Length: 177
Length: 177
DNA sequence: CCAAATCTTTTGAATTGTAAATATTTCGCG
DNA sequence: CGCGAAATATTTACAATTCAAAAGATTTGG
Image 1 (cartoon, each protein chain N blue to C red):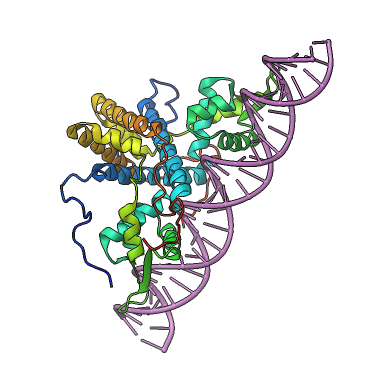
Image 2 (cartoon, each protein chain N blue to C red; image 1 turned 135 degrees about the vertical axis):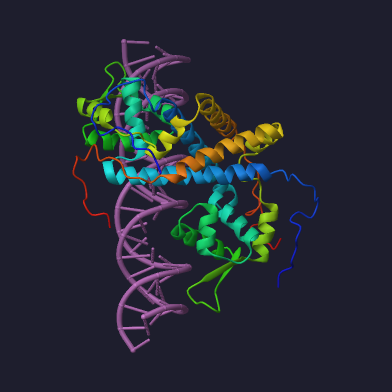
């Protein structure tokens, strides 16, 4: 027997609820996340490497001999994940790993000839459709979109503040609220 | 639909990097993905539900009595994932599921009182930091950012064309289901 | 009444991140 | 100079999420 309430927040009925547009942002972001995920699975099935793996491969090419940590920062993946990915790439002989002679803790990674060859033949990581559409836009529009994404990313990157145990509660987890 | 580009001619090779900005887009998108993922894990640890779970919960609230399929479309998650999430939400008594009386295949989901109460106390799903920053922007800027995201999402959503087995070789699975 | 279609769930495989473990270097201090 | 603690870099162990594909149920149509 639930009460029908047309108003969501009991306190104020003003428009422009605080999380309104933010929520829209989240929804769109999820759409993007899903697109990228699906595309990654698709690519993985057809070429044998996921998008993150390809990104790492590109990063290795671009950065030369890099450490896992540096790589990790560049591709926005945790060190552990980078290790996993490098395992795969190494297994396919697309990269080589070797410990630094000066510091044995450090592991350098570099592209093999196969890796380089593979990358040369690599298709755009995003859908052809996306790339052609995007490249079809006016440069200024491209800039605007990219800039917007960067702003969003920067705003998101920043905070990892801890707000709120509202469900589990600090002390009472099962009390009727 | 999409223009065919002279790509299989084999010419191509090297150039002014056509996918240059596209790639920048991808990088930034990955940054956003990671941010959201980290935030989701953080929220999960503190409140016991991940962001997707909260999104589904919100969707159930907003849409009333919904089927999994409808829900799936709204939250940009596969039906299978929605099922998994609903299992959890039901386990916590935040939603109820019941089969449609008219069509037994269909399962409706609706919010319980607990679910409603939980949502009222829910924090913004994105970082506080992000929300406050974002809300601090001029409305027009907010619109612009949102609009940009939507454009990106739309461009990405579209294509799931299959291009290229470049690593596994020219021959790939011949049968497409 | 059987076959095709529809909606949901289960199964199985893959990715990712946190936390702990491992290895190595650096540095303080006797 | 040498020993051990702390710091640093990477990897392993483990848990959680997601999706595609197949399986279950149920309805609809010929």
